[in-house]
Length: 477
Image (cartoon, rainbow, N blue to C red; front, side):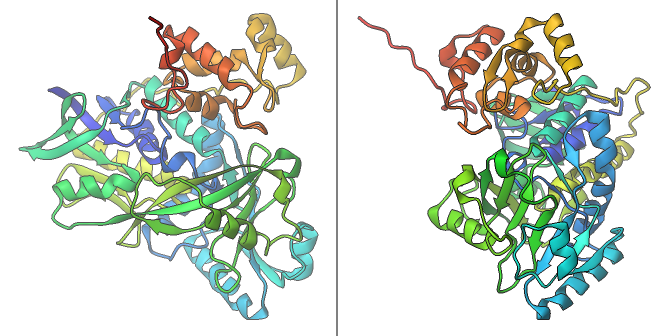
């Protein structure tokens, strides 16, 4: 058995945020995840919205941590060097009868502590966003709304945690947890761990671990959301994130730019039994485009470059579960659906604070608070490009033509803390394969680079872990 002070189940944005905050203390912290990389679940497939906080019901954990997380995001993005932009958000009303709903959202936002929320007239809205439908009659405007790179945020948190001493064990599935006196025994497919404190941040599987220890059972349903991602040439269709008033005109389909310059429309919301069910459907994607079309004068349907689906952890309790459970020493961040991405930094700080007090942890004197991201040669200044190429000629060799990602960037993504081990790992760290051709041209070269840098055969390189190998070795007689 391996002894640790704190074991965190889950390496998504919430688990990585908790790990980063725990790394401020003198403690042995371990994060386990059944996937081959951090950010493999809900955190890799969502809207990338930093919600301002006007939607959540006042007094709930959703409202509390949403607003706190929103206020933390800008400073955190500068500290950890991930993409974030405060572009504001609009909630559109298409009927005069819906203006009352906008007023309710405004009052809710003000009660939650959201700053600057106002209701705009039709003329003001269309002046701000000319591409919006002429059927708009008014809109709620929240200037503190933003957009963020979800995997950039998650990877930044995890990397910084690792630099500060947190251990990560990936491809590690938790099989059973139990309380042994004052310790938690955590059996995995690899090792058995004994932990003084246990943190459940397992996304759609958080109910599984909660119910192993707690008498008050919970149920988490996988709520699937399907999306369409559009080419960068139409990425400036809107500047703000565009929502619709729920009702006859739709239920939650948004239109938004991404921090990388694309346009994104989605998601749907369908409860499913399969907690791995991330397939897209004809019906779902049709709903995305038809409902999204209500917000715009014209949907650039010919510019779709990919579609995808993600799962949200919808808890039957109707709110985030944050803090120490009924079992002493067992802490939870469960049911973290939207606005969980925005709330994650605040939830991380809260859980780490509670755990540190419970265990009497001492703050580190040498905590490293800042982290530098991989240089993006596509957007770097000419001076930076020249400097990087002079240091390492690999930064002049473009591998991904769509996103202009160089070999130097890919090599950095592999060799940095918690570096990429899969093609998807490289993609999320560098954007190689995220462009128009969706990795059609750059995959073979990226596989080759991964194998070279890791010192393994190309036949062992996978897309996202065991079972997704690209190549097989044929041996002739």
